[in-house]
Length: 175
Image (cartoon, rainbow, N blue to C red; front, side):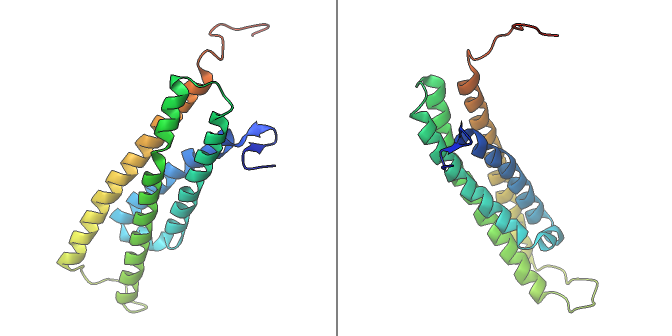
């Protein structure tokens, strides 16, 4: 088994499923963590770790895709998919950076918050509220961009793989 072929199949077609699942999941977790500090505290270290695994899966899929690209007929659809795929890494990096900042900020806030046993937290300062609003806006923007980009890349890959690759009418014995 190599990074380019898994069980006789191009690894790209398998690895991209990690990207397709992890990018929206990380995006959702980042937005939830940015908007609800309690949720971010509950997610804890899982938030940046999820985003890190997401970030690591992108270059793996890209590398396996570049290997596959050299082994398929080049056409406009394949070139478009490759071009779009090269743009996913900055979005994944943005998710990772935001996830880490949200985790770190909420970790520090929890440490400086109430004493053990207290049920209420002090009201956030004005600057903390501004930071939370900016973080939420950034999270929504980066998460939206990442999800839209992963959709566009996947759609272009499906079109590249399946154009003229199937019959619109059943063949053989179809029930």
